[in-house]
Length: 106
Image (cartoon, rainbow, N blue to C red; front, side, top):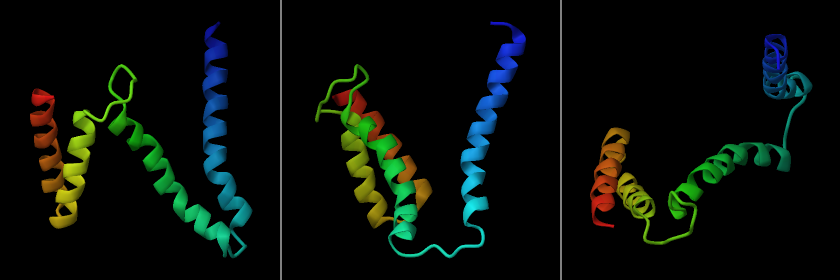
């Protein structure tokens, strides 16, 4: 591929990415969204976060499933800690310490 092709490809990817984010604003700016569509839109960020995080908790680096996974145990411990101590900094620090300790044990 030539340099011109790379630049064209990057510009097209930029257009698709930007268009996917801006198009809904243009389509729905004058309309009131309600009912199941509003509920669906509100749940999308939670579903995306779960789709990104959950595989990390149950898959080991070589992509096989295991419950003896330091990521899973650290995640569960950090979740319980964060529910009891509502401080983001302490929760992240606690999770890092637990993961480090479990990674040495397991």
